[in-house]
Image 1 (cartoon, one colour):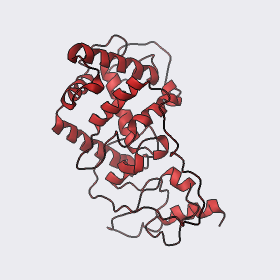
Image 2 (cartoon, one colour):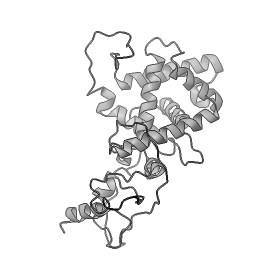
Image 3 (spheres, helix red, strand yellow):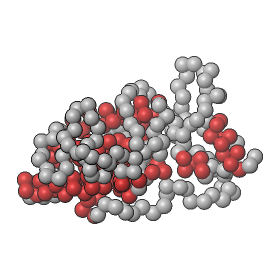
Image 4 (cartoon, rainbow, N blue to C red):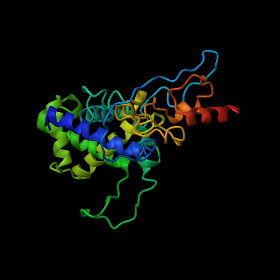
Length: 277
C-alpha cells in the first residue's frame, strides 16, 4: 500500500461515513458503511452567551489510555494514521483521537465481547460466517499488536511505530491480505477489527473519544444527532448546511442564543426543553 493507496483508502472511508450519516448511525460506536458525499458543509460554531454558566462539556475530560500500554498505544496511533491519513481532505484518524476511541472501547463492554457469541466450537471461519474466535477484542488487539511488532522487529529491526510510512503500509497490506502467519490470532482478523474500529472512531459521536472537533462529520456534511427536520423537509433541492451537533453539545446547550439561526430548530428546542422553557 503506497501513498496513493493511502489517499484512496481515506476517500473510501469518507464515502463509508456518508452512508453511516445518511442512515443516522454515526452517533453509535459500532457502525460504518459506504456511499458518496457531493459537497462539503458550511460549518459555523454554535454561539453561547457569555453570561451563561456552563459545566465542562462531556467528552472533554483529560484523556489517558486505560487499556493500551504505551507500546500498544504507539502501534495503534501509527496504524490509524496510515489507515486514515491527514491530507488535502482534512485531518486524519490520529489527530481525530481515533486511538483514544479504540482504547476506550477496549476498556468498555465491547472490549470484553459483551454482545458477542462466545460459545464454541471454534474453527476456521467460512466466508459466510462471522467472527469465529474464542478471543475477545481486548485479546485480539493485545496478541495482534505483539505479533505484528515481533514480525516488524525480525524483518526490519524496528517495531511498527518506528517504521517509515512506506513500510507501515506494506505491513498493513500484509495484515489485510492475511499474509502474516501469527500463532495466536489470524492476521486478517486482527486487521479487520483494527480497520473497522478506526472507521467507527473517525465517525462516531465525539462523546466516545474520537472524531475530535467533529472532523469526520464536517468532511461528509453529517449534521450530528439531528432527530427531526420539520423546518427543512419542504425545502426541495436546497443543500442542508448546518454545524454538526454532538451528544455533548445537546447536553450542554441550555444557553443557546436566539440568533443561532444556523442550528436546526430541533436542536434549539431540545435545549429549551432541558432548560424548562
